[in-house]
Image (cartoon, rainbow, N blue to C red; front, side, top):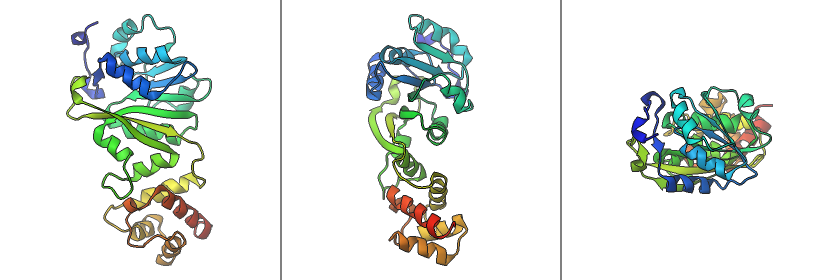
Length: 271
């Protein structure tokens, strides 16, 4: 089937890649082997699925658009280790997705921009079976995911991703390689997940990070007091325990600072 025969659905934010060299590079970036099982999110035309399948033990691919079924079947006709499921991976329960895998698995995806963050958080927060995520995202989102402390792109999502693993941009991708062409360039980001990277109460950590970034121009002192609904004395005790300047803002704090704050809150206030 030729590209011109594919009906692209704007509702799903579809932008496909047909450049074989780039697709091969993305799979190479993912560093998967014949022992790996892979979850692909967004089958599209099946072009990336086909290359993934040749490199791994098994690929399970979720596609929301059932109208792509004929082109996917055609592209994967000679592939026997790929399973395509026509459902919304964002809405599908984790346990149903993971029933397709024997053990841990990797994720590779070229996602519509609007579901990137919620989908990544779904797999980071709801399961410990994902080894790594290699994902194509909007370039500015990639920069936010991998931002350094004290930079303008450093945000709550940066802290959360780095709490659970290590994040790096592998390559930039021009908008010109997509069909149809989007308005912005993209980047391939890899998140290598590490269970137990930091030892602290995860739910409490997430709450504190969320509160800290409540209002970016406010100090960490003000945001924690308001967000956690604690007294001035209590937030003072927390910050002093962690040797954190009261005038610092959330973007000035490292992941380790947030871990320390979580422990300080747990030890002195939440008891």
